[in-house]
Image 1 (tube, one colour):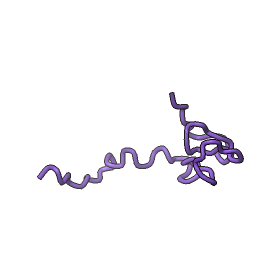
Image 2 (spheres, rainbow, N blue to C red; image 1 turned 90 degrees about the vertical axis):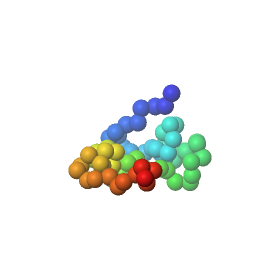
Image 3 (tube, rainbow, N blue to C red; image 1 turned 120 degrees about the horizontal axis):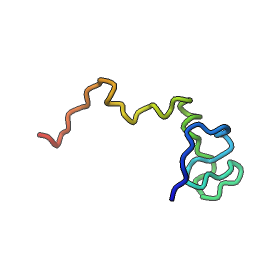
Image 4 (cartoon, one colour; image 1 turned 180 degrees about the horizontal axis):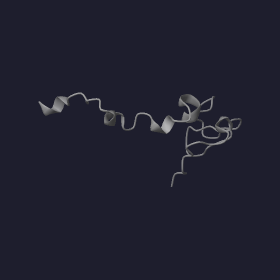
Length: 69
């Protein structure tokens, strides 16, 4: 079972967020790469969870589905 993903961690810079192991940034064990994966709050700000998932609900019309023809 996967660990629960924290929405706003206190110190996201201390952890690699690339997999379910949540390794310390200075000892990544998963082989995810040579650099740690940043938490979305570091990339997009405190309101990152409100972005994108329901973008169609803001009144914008979705493009037509080509399979409907």
